[in-house]
Amino acid sequence: MSNGAGLPNNTDMEDVSDVAVLLKPEGEGGSVGDAAEAEIVKKAPVGMPTTRKIVLEESELIPPTGLFIGLNGRSYKLLPGYEADVPLGVIDILKHAIVSMPVTNPQTRQITGYRDRMRYPFRYSSED
Image (cartoon, rainbow, N blue to C red; front, side, top):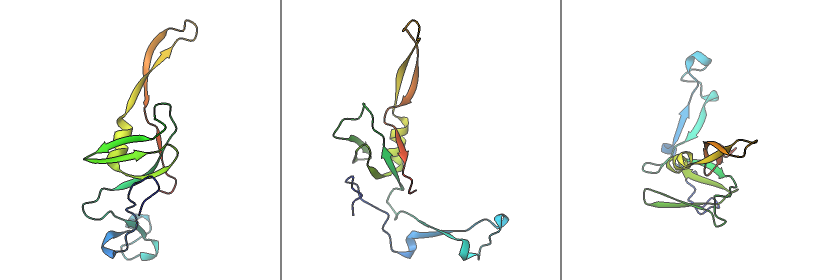
């Protein structure tokens, strides 16, 4: 199954072994046997990376055909404005891709320094 951005969707797991149950700690009004308050969290199958849903923001630095990212021999193409389910390694690549932008003095219009900003800004999907 695909998520619309050409990436496999690894969130459709029916096997009970892929589901973890998280309970509230006993100090917060929960106990180990309190299944009514349990939150079910799906884990990735063994060997598959943990993924998160993100949306790549529009930027003049991203070509119109999308952003190509390679991670451990796998390639990912992210399109701005579309939700994509990507491994945490791709998110790490996006976080560490920075560009230095000049800071100018408004009166003299001379460059007084540089500041770093994200080269490929993104946000986590609201569904996570």
